[in-house]
Image: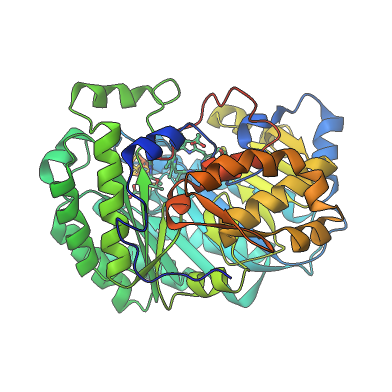
Length: 465
Ligand SMILES: C=Cc1c2[nH]c(c1C)Cc1[nH]c(c(CCC(=O)O)c1C)Cc1[nH]c(c(C)c1CCC(=O)O)Cc1[nH]c(c(C)c1C=C)C2
Ligand SMILES: C[C@H]1O[C@@H](n2cnc3c(N)ncnc32)[C@H](O)[C@@H]1O
Ligand code: SF4
């Protein structure tokens, strides 16, 4: 039986840099299985229809994702799909196309499906002006029916946020917000090209709280230039004074082959692997000592947060937005590069804005890539997702849920997990296995044992720590 320990100490983690180094290998973040790297280019009309087919008669709740790619300036560490501009008018055109896409998509799904979740991500959704936010709100409400209790969340860049925008998002219905802080140290901020004074964060938090937003998340990154254990301790202490409900503390993913601007960071001193491990251990100790649970990987939430309750109830989910409370939803994602997910398929929109526009002009759903899950994919997806969320696996239950004899189906995988038990990442028990606090940090390296596509090459993925 898994418990969510309120405090995790260095000893619990079996601090052994050797061991962490051994397991800190590139592995997917499993926001999907198979990962987006497995998606196949949509070649023709029939493969597009095949990807859309399982939307046609599907029922059940919907989760919507809207990608707003614009940002006013470039953070050199950034791994997201974004376009840098200060020209707000660009977003008018973007909204014109989002409107086409939303209407075209909505005509494919049953009109009695209710939206239980809506997330605005980016880029920076607060690149939009107040009137643009209002317009987006109208088009979503026109196309879809929202559940009264829908969870509506937005990612905000505090540096460019106004109180009027907060108000507009509140009128749209947001009840959760996530703000990018990354690091509060001035030297680090200069090195990453993101100057964000403390007062800016404080003002943002107070606007959001005053507006009645009950759930706030703060994003931080460790592994950035000039960061040390000492400097990151200050960042954590400062951010804890904001009293966020959730924290995401990401390991800096250095992928200069896909994000060339990250090469600029190579000119500054980056913490080495051992310092990153120290920073992470300190983070887990500090946050779990201050009333946060370690959900797994990079996520922390207050002990009374619904996310912690969902984890205890084994109902937590994992998708492209990270961890989520909504089970059995189809994700309909709109905008450049966004990824949709339904029972049997993943669909990704074009990552190039002009192509995204021209596909919509030509009357299509602007898909670039997609993937139809095989039966084996579905089994493995279920097992990997439960492991990532529950931090344990009940072999009997997983077998039953997937109509397989688990021990038989995964005999080779179970064998491969034995060395991980010896190294203290997990423990086998009568029912199956449970991940240890050390294993939580390396959960993607545990999960990838169930990934049929990992093989020898894990190219393109970042390391866990
Ligand atoms: C706000 C921007 C986003 C971040 N992640 C995503 C978005 C929209 C979603 C996303 N992240 C990844 C994929 C690919 C599919 C997958 O592997 O599940 C998608 C659709 C993975 C990913 N994210 C980063 C890298 C380097 C990779 C690929 C390799 C890997 O799995 O490690 C960088 C990165 N981007 C974001 C974060 C938080 C992050 C790393 C911590 C934001
Ligand atoms: C959405 C969140 O993703 C995080 N983020 C953006 N780019 C990277 C990267 N290269 N590595 C790790 N985290 C990143 C930031 O913390 C941002 O706020
Ligand atoms: S971190 Fe946020 S604000 Fe910075 S470039 Fe990336 S998406 Fe834009």
